[in-house]
Length: 140
Image 1 (tube, rainbow, N blue to C red):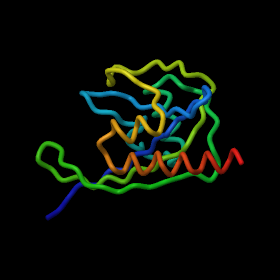
Image 2: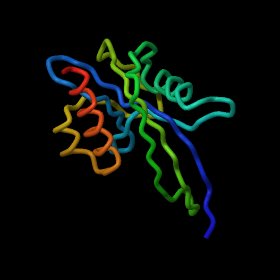
Image 3: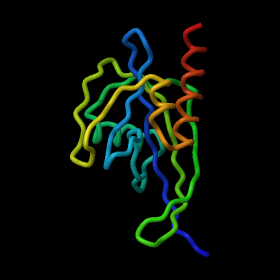
Image 4: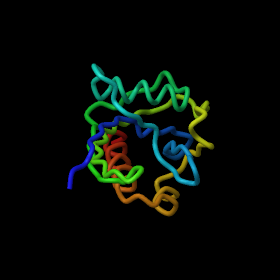
């Protein structure tokens, strides 16, 4: 059986306010992190930064070096199987003020523990756990 392929890139953004909190966007009752489809001529980081700005209004974040994670999965869209490759970067926001795009219903900053209890997707939980360990090592 054939399938269509897509590539997206995005950012797992965190903010420190005594705790580490991660940004999740809400759409149709589900939570996800800012990401979007790669346009022709863009590299992964360019796509991730563009999508972050479009979806959250966050134009200046500190990109955390040496954190880049690729996740591959399949999903169905209008009867078509899609093989998705998503590349994620880690970024630190200097503000928790977000201006979401019209494609989202809201946003929330959550701790790792809140994410693990509220988010359904195993891939996103794994991403947050890996990022949380990475941040902890940076703080040592």
